[in-house]
Length: 237
Image 1: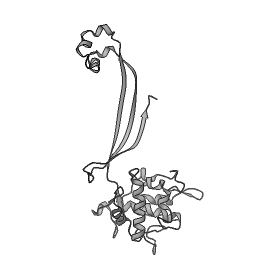
Image 2: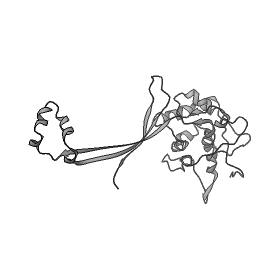
Image 3: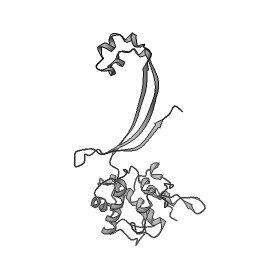
Image 4: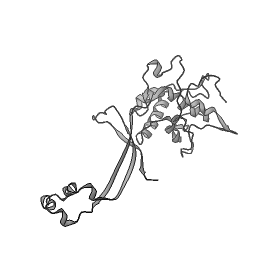
């Protein structure tokens, strides 16, 4: 068990914490049910300075985890240590072929749904499978998240949008509209615009909330890709 007697170097180090007998914080769920602890959704850590460390503080470019280019992502994964704890000597690292295989597996997932947090990777156990990420135990598998934290970033903008619609009917009698109907007989939809608000009645309506992800950088076709991350109908309750 690794417990740093110093400031944390990554959020993933929370995975070493025990909260029950023989139970530690889980960074990924082997069952794929998403039952792991999503620490990346709630915590952040300012990385420690060190030789060869690629961080924002050093002005280094971090690779976008949502990149569609396998070679680019593989460059960030190359030589990634499969260590059981930070600084472990002699730990195996990913070679070029392994880095490319893992990059293609990640891209296969983010094509379905964009990543906005490393916690999302923990819901895909196939990314931690020995055939993709050649590790021999849980601590080595969690090293994938521990090191991606310092090598990747999430490019994108998120927007929370609220929308509402309602259906109305008019309490004005047909003959009271008189010339309004005759004036707009060719376009009945314009009649409602002539009815005072005091005579309108609400029949029903709905409200919804949507979380939208948008890439701020246009793609090769000149379009900014967008994706609905979450959608929920809102009620009065």
